[in-house]
Image (cartoon, rainbow, N blue to C red; front, side):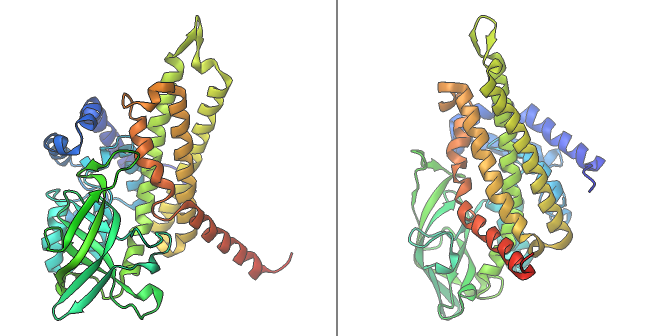
Length: 401
């Protein structure tokens, strides 16, 4: 296999890193302390600088104003951006908007693309993806309870959703709701575009995560759909194809997540090493001299590098053969990289001691926001069972040795 990175991609990564070093990292702590609502004007100015630098929308085709990167190339960019909690937002490739852009581009009608996709691409609005429910298992989306009933030229939506990330301040939601309750499990749901100013769309609350409810993009909302009526023209893609469309988000989405997590790992490891070298325990004795800290640094380096190779190979496989050919690999990277992320963050916080628990470094931000990595997009345990079934199936077909 050829592990080299094309010269054009290497230069792009240099430009991305230069922008982060010169424009974002110097003000990151101040912006995070302000919170998203208060920081929005300054974030908008930084986004304008990203556009001016020709780095906008790395995940989208050039015909839509993006960089037209392959999934593998965007993965490398995503790793760089992941080193800051604000990186993806500044480049307009943040979840859930990036996934919503992709399915609107692929399944949206011209009218839907003009109304919803164009301002999203321009960074003029944000969106949210409304699927998870408080009373239904997130690991089994065939058990959704939220329903959208056809009523003449409209759909009327009733149900409850939660962990609708970034709903606070979003212009519209893409909601997955049951439209054919008697159909087979994977043909029951549809996706509908719901402007958030529609009567019957109600943000119940921003759910506190480790004591922080957050606001605007940095939030996860509970949503009530109460006789929420939208035109049938707001159906995204074919009726009852919600699960198939959701799969279109999952493959690329998990690559984006995993590479972002590796960016966080790189930032955390760098902070760990700087702290270990600088922290003096006594005359001529640094924290880095302790064997356990040396083991943590070495193992973290190995685990990050191995995880990156897994993710880039999976991205390459999707680029070459499509998502269906990489289903097992996508599950593998999801639970493996999430575990590496948890391990490296835990070690970095421990090396910082009490400082690691404070907001004086970015570690606490990452820890509280990213513990969900082992839960959302399918719990680790589900992905492990899926992979194990596939492994055992291959052996059962092969027969005894």
